[in-house]
Length: 355
Ligand code: UD1
Image (tube, rainbow, N blue to C red; front, side):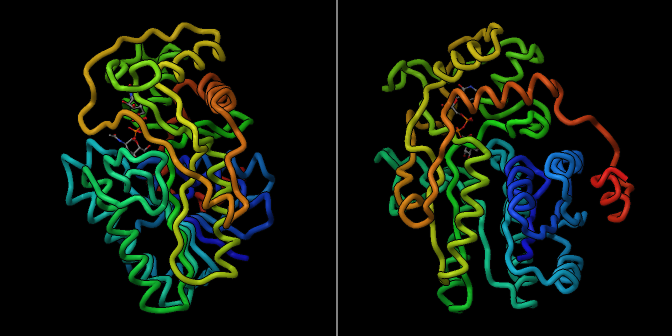
């Protein structure tokens, strides 16, 4: 089976590509490297002994996208490509709508033109907005509190309408909780540009000494220790969830939705403690004001994925932190900086194959 992965060089994408290749899938990757590096795929190729075919294409370039679909004719698509920073989306809403919504629209049209109608979409628990009814179920009403979240919501709705209009489509909306961790080799992991927005990469950078201390956004929430509680999920478990969803879609058309979380929450202070323990390094922190838009607590009910897909998260907080620490300590400043902008697709593919 031939799977085309958009955003396959990114954090969740690269781990999923590794899993697909290991399981014998033929994999093609489309990425524009706006927030990723071909280096991740070079390392994937090294780890699994096989490489994906790589195309440097922007989803906004509809003609180029159509061409690639016409020449590859994949059986299914896993769609990760998208912008994902909440604060940036508030400052640049049109860029977010254009990139995420229009990019997905172009992708769907390119798929339809070659009769490829199986899609796994990278949605997010952000579509539950500020819901306080826990645990979060797939049936919990959706809302958005910022443009990034609204792009995910719009895309989910667009996909539901598409599946309703044509019974040949098989679509999975996967709502991720908080993806963290790294491949157990420490060779691939999350490589945020600039100052990380999310807690775990920030804590990892403090432990390794790249940043001075963690600001804990609020110490007076009604939670176990006053700090925010989230459902962190290991990226390798998340990758496995995509393969399980893809498998399910082989036998079931229509639009489906699954939460991908562990069902258990950890507080900010529990995360900081776990990191200090695993890294044996001090992780200084300071409690500051709450961050606008944050909820006290959120965690998934992952039961639907277990029942339908036979999938559940296997890795706990210790392993998430342990793997993340291995990645961070082996790559304190992420993937090496290198200029890829001028490389042709052929040169990029030679690079990831190590030729
Ligand atoms: C955030 C986004 C969410 C997005 C998700 C993607 C916001 C408001 N939400 O989720 O839409 O889908 O990332 O991964 O940005 N924290 C600190 N100090 C920090 C960073 C975070 O105390 O420097 C706390 C937060 O208050 C929260 C927890 O750590 O309680 C997790 O934060 P984060 O990693 O940013 O994830 P979310 O806010 O859950």
